[in-house]
Length: 219
Image: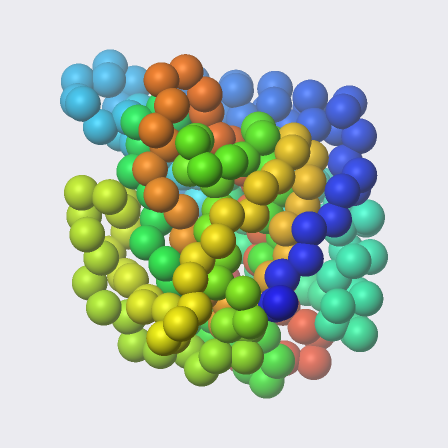
């Protein structure tokens, strides 16, 4: 299908440490990584809770969990070689927050030869109501395509990749602590968080195979 959900890679104690770490981060401004409007002078919940970019570059706990051995072991199995960590992100996705239009990760990471693989960890349960991840099965072998423009009312990012004919995005339903693995060609995204009181937090890291020779400068 092009993706895999693995349970039990994080203990509740480890998840609680991730909770505390990103709760602390949410109360500050970290230039270039996390720049919230702490006064919340806007109707857009993502202004107060934007995604945290590359937390591993300024936070030791984030770096440690980016290199979390149980996750690295699954990646080594999928790659059949050593994985190299390339990017970390944390999404708060508060109630009412827009989603992210369907896209392909390796359009951005540009890992070659080989591919990037995402390890998408649900910090809150993720379902259709709170804007859990959508995947388009079997598109992991689909070519990287030039994206169209997304609907800015529903997506906080500007790119949109249309799924192939007869293929639909389906929800990847996840419990707290589940990790979803998928490669950089798989088309995926999410809808708006339609709940009034539930966040959909996720810790997302991207990796490259150690035999790759190229990756985008940002990573």
